Length: 263
Length: 285
Image (cartoon, rainbow over all chains, first blue to last red; front, side, top):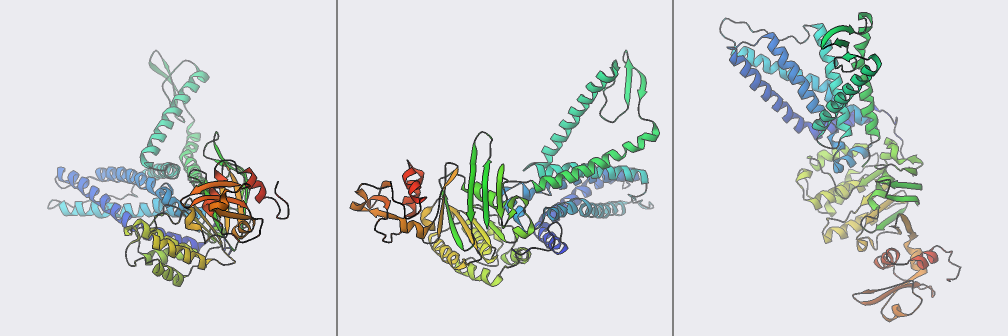
């Protein structure tokens, strides 16, 4: 046996793996970018056309958020597809690189690289639509995605949480990852909300408004709202760390699921 | 090189495939793993290479657990499944991006093997026929020069000339540093190639012997000689009756793997089993 430098992470080995993944998947990724650009062009163009060549900042922001989230989860759900199909999985699992390196290639492509490519494509298409279709005398205003710090934070939190959920689904399921992950997520949320509601009814007693986990409790009487029972504002900020904690936990879970993958 | 101790494994708790299975495979040998369809040959190979994890017991490669799939172990291991995957890359692209993972990979050897197996170059691998894809991957697996080479049904999908070339190349690629394991249910494909035969049957290894050792201890009789009493197994072939008998005269007898396999997997093979597991000097009861 010829022991490699490090059994958990070696940069040259990781670079080799990254390069192999890129060569093998670049045509597919290139086509995906083309499809994304096409959809954006079609829908932004239609929106601008119906607004006489003008697209508001709010409208652009809504398109950006919607397409970012939907394309992020679709792309992430496919990122470990080579571990789902048996013939490919044999090669992928036995290629001489560590589990961490294999995981990181998927993580890098589905999060930072995706974000960079999506933002570039969005701006290119948005600029094309706005400047190309702007009526005479009108100066188009291009969206600044960093314009509102609070919105960016909330958006980033939601994006990483959804990424973590679909990354877990990408490695857990063997096929139709996107659908199965979505189904599992919504089933879990529904189940948790029901259990939470029943548990609160037992603990508090009386009439309550249905409450998903980690939300304010509303006491009712005869169908009317009586009293809100929530965390004080000083403690509420701790609750904002919950998605982040959950994200980290799910990213780690996806890694360990990869280490446990069997055929 | 490979040490399997007390392996328990299955796909369902109710129907375990292996129970307390033990097996050792060493460098310098070509092992032929034989078994009926569904006997668990592929599953055993998956346990050996770390694609399936034992319920209980250990599968070690050079004292490292195969299931950990550590890069140092994987660099010295190549597993060729029955159904190969060929990406949309040319042979040159595939080699450029994959060979670097195997420290002893030889590009010269690869192109020699590809030429011998008559695999065309320049085309994308996914455009090859199934047989061509398999031959390319066999050539790549051999050129990787890994200490452990595991081939699952490698001759399935190969035409007759390619099977001959395959046997020739494989025999030339064996060295004291390599351990090759080949599973098949086409016993004839492995004759004259393997030096040790391992038979999996009814959840256990029923045979793990050198071919030379088997030739010394058994006689594979045909015709009238096969009909004499005292045989461990008697059967019929196109050429007449066949039988396996103890080699009392000590004359060399070519091992008929198919007959041996049939003897071990059909009917009562206890006498043959007991005889083969006795030290040579003991007499047969």
